[in-house]
Image 1 (cartoon, helix red, strand yellow):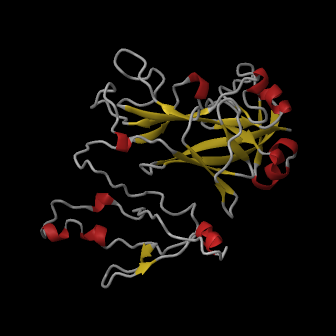
Image 2 (image 1 turned 180 degrees about the vertical axis):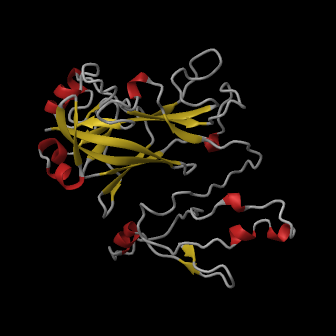
Length: 308
């Protein structure tokens, strides 16, 4: 929904998302709106002028006059910055979700590799045999996208840490319960791959929308677990956060059957390149992770790779 005009009377424009319209179209009377969220994607709070020469009435005037987008139905594009209600109004810091680049088992690919800065998903046996030995081809890190970690096949994974990223508060303190994420929403293009646990165990999507984006609601181990303190000063030795820890999210990706068995999608939406004189095709995408409690969102770059 969106406010169409804030210069006079407030007009509220509310539309159903594609998922909402699909459920309404069932016509069985089961469609009910039970929850809603507010967002402030368009607002730049840097426009608050606390020393405006015309007085306090003008401090937030530019913010209040910010043009607001008309409501649209695409659920992927809406509510990127969700508003959060907390019982404690004296908080100095809010938690974040941060990609872990410290844990050796979950590092993104090296800058001089086949997937610089991304998590590389190798989609078949030939690709793993060529690029997946980690040292000879200097891949740095990869995810075995056709077999996971089963059968003794080595594979990395993706890890995100949740908590306070500040050294102003000791990591010995526990994160407030209302700031601790216990459930995450992971979205991935279902044409390209699916989410598994770090051992290759299959996870079923909660919903697949009309754009083929699969949403996974993850809340149980081994995918979601507490970010435990491990060293004497209370911080996790593999944590990417400086302050009180919350939870960590660890998952892997299984390439789709289409990517594993053909080059169709690589030709349609991908590109090609070479590395160490070996040619390959690739598709760059993002895996979106959202905290169900705080609404904090992070996009993880992923590259699907197939040897040619």
